[in-house]
Image 1 (spheres, helix red, strand yellow):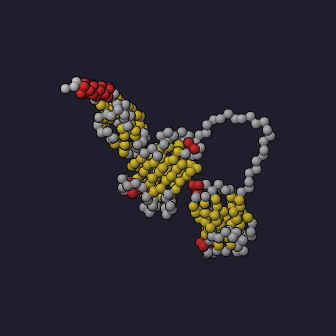
Image 2: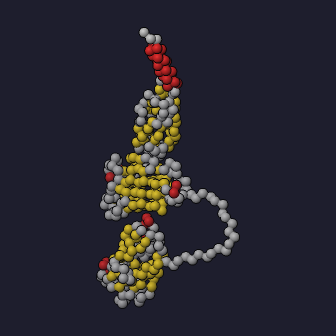
Image 3: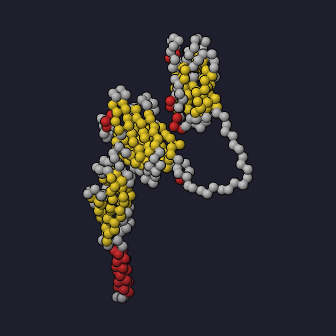
Length: 347
């Protein structure tokens, strides 16, 4: 019998033993990710193991006394504050640990965008019952989250409003706010940029659409640059005059200089609102109710055709949609309730 087969068999066994010994030397490298580093109290947090080196067991401590041996556990914090989460990953050759700091907010605060945080809160009102209450965070990640309104709806687990923050600063744009709802309640969403303290509010009134967005949002902080030395003569710039919106009050009607019952305006264009009363009946025959959503104040009109300049306004993306107004005067008889108009804001 030839000795060569036994020789090659011995070499093969030795090679496998060496390979096993090399593999056994490598302990795992521990790492993990989290659905949000800023969860609200009583909001579920998902932890995901991303360790390398083929660990076979996992040991988690969540910083509040709770532990887990699941590979990808979930956890709920019942108190607010900072907590350090630690994962220890183990295999036959050893173990390694990784730690991450979390900040748990009150259950009424939805904190989004860990790289540049925003705190969002919600208040709601049911005008049919007079009930008011605050939103409660019931689910979130680092980009979006859900609120319930248990003190108004009576259901703590029912999602009523969803909010999403989009970071467009990497392309030189703003931080965008998107929000929608599964409720017919009135509510106000408050968004605070923690780095600057800037606060913006967004409201949904009863009977109005609840899905809105604001891509003018919060502007990113510009990077300081050195101001170049200008040696040439600067060119004077001319600010264009605003477009004029002419509204005419006459008997039982508003006339928009031929524009029909709805006057269309565009986002980013500046308008100057002119109003006059040409109704021959008496004085102070008509009035303009104002449009608070566009920042336009009300005004009593005087018959005779004199023009009243209300103010200038520049519609924004947040003002997209219909903005109704009416005659606010009733001193000269009936018919004023039929004097209705709408300024429509389009892109």
